Length: 394
Image (cartoon, rainbow, N blue to C red):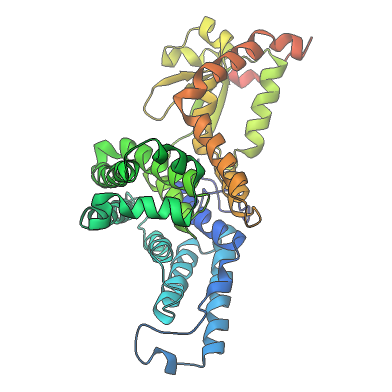
């Protein structure tokens, strides 16, 4: 069932863009606004293209550019003319790059191109140009480093980590090793990961591996440096949404319809599921049998049928559901972008927590916590039962 577009900024369905592409564009727009990025447009006025400074006085040009930037970003967040808004937002940034040598940066150019490509996306088609753009960036970055003598020797990373960042962990580990040994290891590991990401993100069957490598690489940069490199961290992480396969119909969730705690959990998820990504069925309805889910399994844990037909249960099911709740990613983005400067510790904590949540390292703790709650759910909500709609009964 199609969901009409609304002014709800937390909704990504019902527009001219597919939900995953719109979520990517919104995450970039949100990060731009929360970091007050418009103040950089373009200051000073030092154009790359001769004659651009003759179009209008610098102050007027800057004011118009900032106005277009702000209006486009707000329109995009509130689901208004999303393709045009995404295109003009990216276009204002790209024009800012052309009009100011000081404003230029690979991170801004990348975000601008991703927004423009999102605006040009054709409904019903795969966002292959967005995916190829990300792969191309990694290919260029990896080759650039591989051809740089300072990266071969490890000199670049060693000087950057010790002299500029004064990274305490790196300094300590390097003191235990031969000169430049750690720097060389870090340099070649970065090159290998970037080229691996480029190959995996360019080849559709390997996209999942590429997304993992990209997320770990960008998160590693932030954890190591404490900085987002202006917009590069936000742009690259948001770009991974272009590789997310959004389900064509709501995913089936099987839950215990006679459990008050389960009902409370269901209502909590439904409140933030603005895109109606999930269809909830009590196991008493017999719907789980259509997917090979036994009543015994459904009584023990929540069951989720993924877009590929795989059944996940309990903690793994809830974690998988987060991918299709844009509100979760907006909150994570805001928690990082809205942090006051300088705030490397807070950014590191947020990124480390999200990485832990989606990594296999969290499985033992997450499964144990979920199972404890599941076993004691009738004690948590004593005497609570849920009235199952007649339409969902056998």
